[in-house]
Amino acid sequence: MVLPLSLIIGVVVIVTSMISGVFGMAGGLILMLILGQLLSVPAAMILHGVTQFFSNGWRAIIWRQWIDWRIVGLYTLGALPALVLPLVLAYIPDKATMLILLGLTPYAALAVPQQWALDATKTSHAITCGFVVAGLQLIAGVAGPLLDTFFVRSTMDRRAVVATKAATQALSHTLKVGYYGVLVGQVQTLDLDVYAAAIAAAVVGTTLAGPLLEKMSNENFRRWTKTIVLVVGAISIAQGLWLLAKPH
Image 1 (cartoon, rainbow, N blue to C red):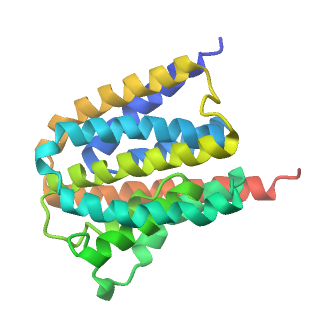
Image 2 (image 1 turned 90 degrees about the vertical axis):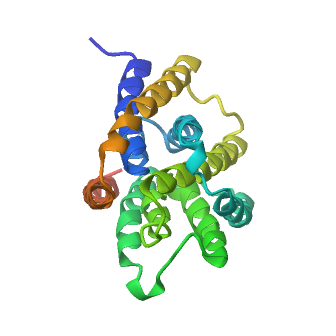
């Protein structure tokens, strides 16, 4: 028996939204990897963007008292110009390129030199974060690990990190949906029941994650985040290289 796509997506989104709700980003990376296997690149990007908007948006609402709105505003200043060049070129990556870039993202983040001391609480760093992260999300789908490098060395509480990142990512995923919606010509690349299942699952998974985040220490939060994204990144790179090696 073939399961409905809406049911498959719903289950996947609940699990990945719970992961994102606890770690702030890893779930989005896993979700993008799975959608990349199931759907075309534009459909995966749009569904991922819609899902992550609701997941991050609901997370931002739950933790709204912890959001640093100054960082969100500076991030927005950097994110908007990042749309220009890809939109002019009307660039849509093929699936292998998307998976490889997706997988390289956490390793690129790890390669950022310690002496750079990126810190989202600094004005120029927050603007740069918006430009780089939003731009990468347009072609890889996810840039959470890179976003994390701007927060991991800050002195912000883990709840402030999760809340502020959620607000910035709700914005970035809105831009991604708009970008692919314009290039594809219509946002409705999938049946509405798939979107409905994904949105409902995102809200449920994010809500369930709240108590888990409260119980986790700042040390475990950072250690487990790093481990999860590197493992998922390696899988994504392998999938992309396999697609490149396949005879067409």
